[in-house]
Image (cartoon, rainbow, N blue to C red):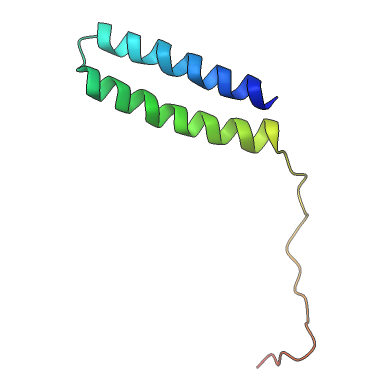
Length: 70
């Protein structure tokens, strides 16, 4: 799953950069935009596909010994 996310984000980065350069946006700005989009895709892919976590449920107060609640 990890390799799939990395390859997908890399492919999306190349395609987006080429598309933006062909759309008459300067190369440095095209690469910057593609990198930012890749950052978010990478985070989402790793968060939800590579390292998914089940919900922990609603928040509950935990009374810890030694701590006084005032």
